[in-house]
Image (cartoon, one colour):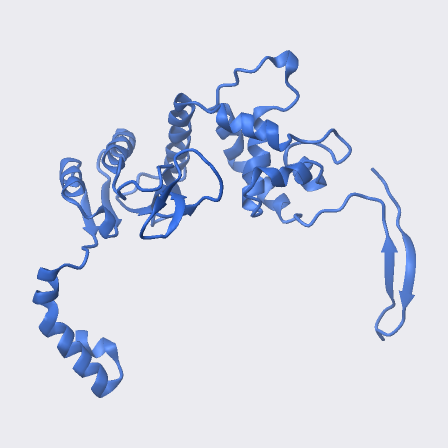
Length: 288
């Protein structure tokens, strides 16, 4: 496509060069930063592997949007902070979004919000199991040689919802309707090994014991001698997590929630820390 713009105004107030205002009929975008990400994705084949894990049960005769193009449409939309599907009623015509989905700017539009909604709701439990394997496969492939030690951070976090989505619930602590997803990341290379979407009022540790069993089964199949240290906040510091860490021979660091016994045991230390801070202005001196 070759479109030539025409000068509309010219100003000479800038001494070094003239300033020209032009009008162009070529399609514009504000998301050109996605192009280097797309090149990175081309090297890793992340979205390609993502799409290949999904079972496409649609009639190919009636299909105009491939699973791969819809995966890229949604993944790159979220990367560019377009979380809502209805954003794609506009983005489906955006030239950069067409490019990252392997279309030219003049090609037909990408999937609409309705098509994307049907696509996401068609994902099955079996698809999710295969997607889980994709994350772990990529993690294993990221190491040139077997690691001796890994540190896994497990985090439950609030994901506010603003509609009538399935399984959203009102959480009293966060004071909002939400989901409570879980993520397991590796401190050594910042990669995500596992993510899980859970209902909004679940316990922070819900399902994490089985997640760890799955992860360690996969990792020790290729790295039998790897040592793994698990870290999490007090929401996961419960007997079940201690037991599963011992079962899987994992070292661990869990936060402990404040309670009356701990407060009583630490009372003298807290008073000493406060006194030292009032004298010196340096809180760290209380721990020297």
